[in-house]
Amino acid sequence: MTVSGLSKTDVRILRELQKDGRISNVDLAEKVGMAPSPCLRRVKALQEKGMIDGYTARLNRKKLGLGVQAVCMVKLHDHAEEAVAQFVEAVTAMPEVTACYSMTGRSDFMLMIYATDLENYGRIATHRLLRLPNVQDVESGLVLEVLKGDSGLPLNHLSPAG
Image (cartoon, rainbow, N blue to C red):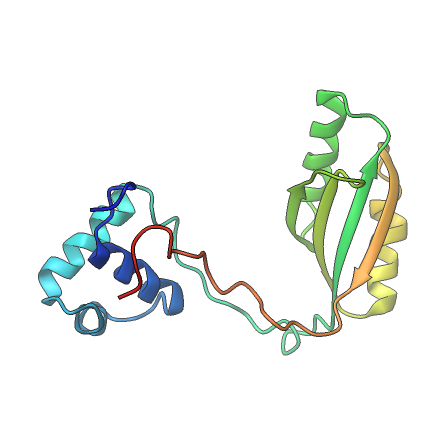
């Protein structure tokens, strides 16, 4: 067992599930060198411990008509708890905002925004984001190419690869 209480087999299971959350239990068991029944018990135990938050499908944004991906750095005027909470509530309610991170540095927040095209993104940025009461500044960067997307969490600190 490692410090986190996970065995090498648990870590292998997590690695495989990050690669393919739809893998069958039989295939998963084979990949990690277990029989299907104990493998399923391990997966359920990992879920119960909260190590697995859930399973999602990765969608192809371009095939779904979302040609623009933007990273927005947002600076607020007021950092009082209530003012920040109002900003967070407003941006997390925007369907185009798929991620919102509180940051250190020159910006207070980083947002990931998807839009159909530049015109659509411009409307989101100027008519919605910049008009929020506490927004001081927005700096946008358009993603030209995703060289490495969300490939899962690094797990090598839990147990040696194997």
